[in-house]
Structure formats: C-alpha cells, structure tokens
Length: 225
Image (cartoon, rainbow, N blue to C red; front, top):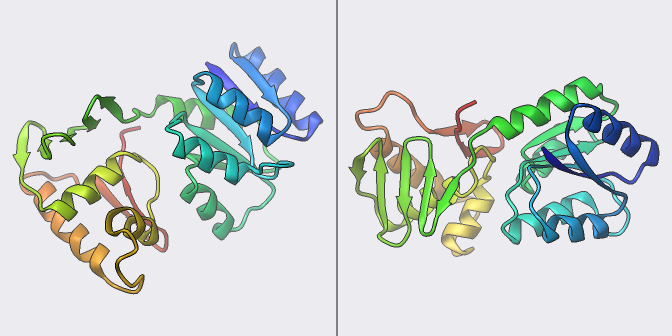
C-alpha cells in the first residue's frame, strides 16, 4: 500500500514508518498538518495514518479538509485521547477507525489492513454503488439487488448522503445540516421519521437492513467486511 503517515512525534513516526516499510508498504511520513495536507492533496494514497494532535493544522481540521475536498482514502486516527466523546468526534470528522496511544504495532497494522479491505463506495459519474444498493443521482433512481425502489425526495437525499459515507457514522445533526439545510429544530424527530420510512422501503422483501443505528451516536450504512 501507499500510506501517508502524519505524526509530529519523531520517535512514534519513525516506529510506525519502519514497521510499515518492513511489512512491504511504501510510506510518506510528515510531521505537521500543513505538510500532510500538501501530500494528501498532491496524490492518491491507499490509506492515511493521522495523529489527532498536530502543530498548526490539527488532525481533525486536516481530516475535515480532506473529506470536504473529496479525498476518500481510509483514515486511521491516532490519539492519546481515549474517551467515547473524543472517538465519536473523530469518527464524525471522517475517520474510519480510531487507535488510542500507546498501542502495539501489530494492532495498527491489522486495523490498517482491515480498513483497506473494506469495499469503498464506487462513484461512476453520477452513480453511487454500495453493496447491492445503487443510487443514480442524475435519474434520481434507486435499486436494491436489481429491484427498483421508489423514494420521496427527502428519503432519496438521506440515502444518497449515507451512501457517500459508507461505514461512517452520520449524526442526526449532520443529516439535518446536509439534507434539510438547518431548516429544522435539532430537537425534531424528522430524521428518525424519514429514516423509518426509508428503511421500510429498502427492506421490503429483504432480510438484511443496510442502515445501522449506532446508539447514542447516529446512523451508518453497513459495508461488508
């Protein structure tokens, strides 16, 4: 794999880079968020190992910039902050996995390998494909396993947003912002109502629900391991 490593601690950076290279990967190592941003936007990487606490542009800010710019390489975030709130914040910012320091290199390598095995969303011009779901954003059509599914506009927008972020937790607030443009009170149950309708239509005739509720965090579109 081509791996971008952004870590400001020299000892940790050398430790990870050496281990990844010994495992046969090509590693580009950076010590600051600014240099990481330049590298990440200059070419494509198969995976990114990103420290949360960085000088200048911190890890969360860098991650948000990359996701906003359409960079979808899987990101493993490293941090000394191990609370649930910290992890949720990292995942909401676009991280695919979280590893708390100190850690064993074998665990980092295994998590990185697992991330790159996950099937990412395939964008074919105007089509989003995740598992057996296909969304055509130009024709505003949805299919599951070849079966046409008719959705209302908000249901369609909800599904498309989840499919653009497969495996990533999407909070109620994020969905309100992106699908309803802040037009509704955050205390409303409009997200739950539309998701319930969306699920009923997607799962009609199917046993597997592709949308997972992450208790206390939000929702995500399941992807196969």
